[in-house]
Length: 113
Image 1 (cartoon, one colour):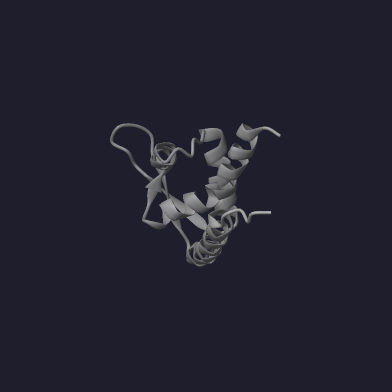
Image 2 (tube, helix red, strand yellow):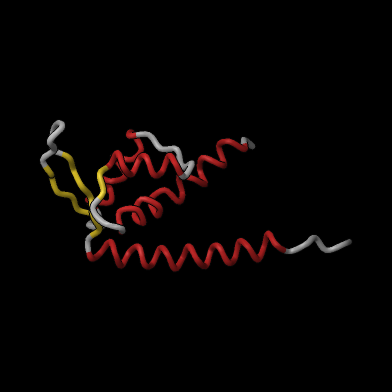
């Protein structure tokens, strides 16, 4: 088994959750999302983020608006919809349960045989 591949899959598994959390703070521009994810060491490229944002929009979890920029073309700013807020609440509950369960498992000492 390849450790690096498993690590990548683990990060991908929580990417949607992290993106929704960032967007939940208020309107956010995609490059700011990329910066925060990169700073958190969840290295993501545009080719991963934009399709994810499109899926979230098509699912009715996020919406966007165009805002004119004084330094270039208009920018898309994303925010959660009411459905997105509810969906994120459910994911947060699941995440907290998974963290507790995982910590319970990994914190146990090996039983001597």
